[in-house]
Length: 443
Ligand code: SF4
Ligand code: SF4
Image 1: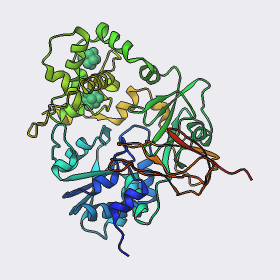
Image 2: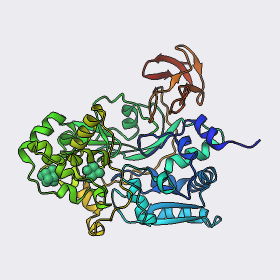
Image 3: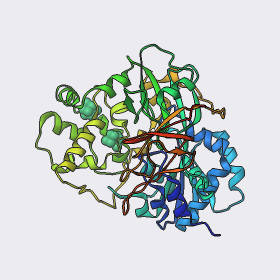
Image 4: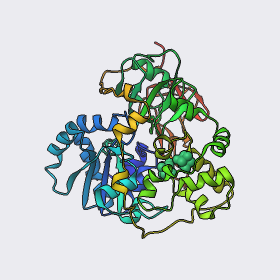
């Protein structure tokens, strides 16, 4: 029987594993010319994608080929940092059997994995302001997503994901965790924190979120768990309240424009000027409203905050605040230009990853976080109903119900954008609220 890939991917609950969790079956329903595998591993000190490409090159390529078939893409490109030589070698052996596929080596800069940046680096094509890669006939998928597509084709739902646990931990590692595993359990797997007073960032050190509750579960989009001493600069900046950031902006912004000079979207030619947004916040200056609405074009990569600003301000967070406020006011993004020039100094303004790591005071944590395939015993998982863009899943199980790993536990609401969810361990459903809690059965 012929397998309908889009339906299989929908049934398996595949979502973008490297971003906000956009449901993958929707992307696969498009028609495009080019399919790009994003193997750039954007954030510093995360190692998931390079390990996946080295360990499972066949699956990555099968996922890419399936995606190409579904979308009609004639060309498949794996964008991967030149420095990941083991992964490149592994992939090259597999792709040589298919002359539609190629590898595009990338330089090691931040944020090479931003989809718009990646597409420009590989194809020298520009995605319109406020647009999508689909607008220029391109689909981009993360490496983990491609593996999940390959698994979905074989009828396997998404029940786990590879995560790098790194930073101030005793044994940094990259391994597969059942979806819903707590951060606490992941830290134990990495030998625990190596400092007594620590904080945890979920995701990468730059774009990740400071987490206060160690029972927070790993989701389909968690790529990293990063531990830092409580006194670290990143912890302080991420932990500051936005209202405090606004007050500090008023006192400290020196209008140097360095935040704008390093902004990857500004450098691609988009109408995004974080310094002017900061100026409007700081002085209430009668700015052209277009400067404020340009916050709609921000991808929240943090380059302006964590690399650009010499005053320790947070233009990235201020942009988010401005964008959210505009949305609350009912405004939509008015910036839709299709033809614009790349900034002439873009090439020289890319941020070398080594310098980013050093600027962020992360050099001490440049460990390899090797991949491990040991089994792990997780006795409880908390699987959020919403791990993706769109509506939360609707539970299809009841408290007290006995379920097996892989069983469907949440479906997509009728007529909505969303993703299914599945049991990541076998056990009994013990609670259903915003998450479905499953406990293993005590023998
Ligand atoms: S976070 Fe800053 S650097 Fe990144 S896109 Fe937004 S304004 Fe530009
Ligand atoms: S880099 Fe910092 S100080 Fe300079 S304009 Fe931007 S926010 Fe202000």
